[in-house]
Image (cartoon, rainbow, N blue to C red; front, side):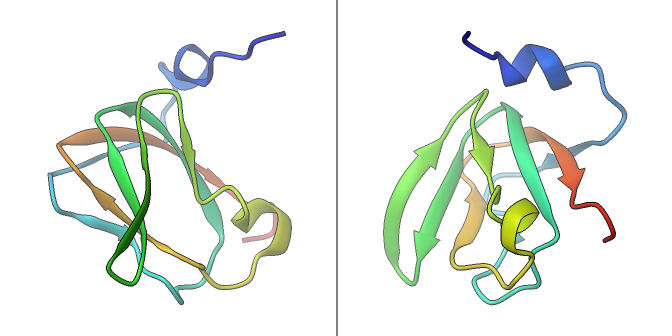
Length: 91
């Protein structure tokens, strides 16, 4: 089964909009939520190294729902984006 996260979260109430260049979270920040990219792209970086670019339907920060530790990378909006935020239970 292929789950389309973009369609699943498209009409929810937890959406946020970030302008290009906005830091969504920084390496070392408390990790308590994940983000589903609904529109736009997000750069995932460790230091100055680009690890990947996440586009619509992709997930950023999902390890927060498992480990609830600190962020191991930085996420920055590459262009204006809309994201769905999912908090870890108990956060």
